[in-house]
View (spheres, helix red, strand yellow):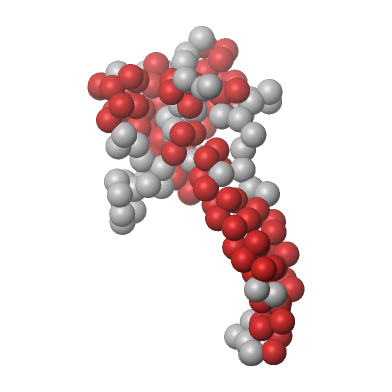
Length: 153
């Protein structure tokens, strides 16, 4: 079993919250594939919904692609470290929160397109409250604090 601390990616994201790590989206897609096949929905798509689903075969291929999305391991256990992990490892850091320059790091800014300010916000919170308390608190950002919903999840 993976320790909670091992689920912290070097960048400040928490793999335990990631749909790729948990398999939530891939599992849901697989469950949909099972139901579609059980009800032979391909026939309904063609006979009843051809206007709404003109390219059902493409949809089916893409859904099956989503079934395969996921991570086999948490970020910090990967054999090939990313640029951020390599930087932390070279400095002996558990994660970027130990670095005094993380708030203005170009490596972290590369993640902003997908994750907004989540990395930096999480790293600040870890630095303020400590890793164990941050993990226990459960308010970890994934898609930025400006996103609607549960604390930017």
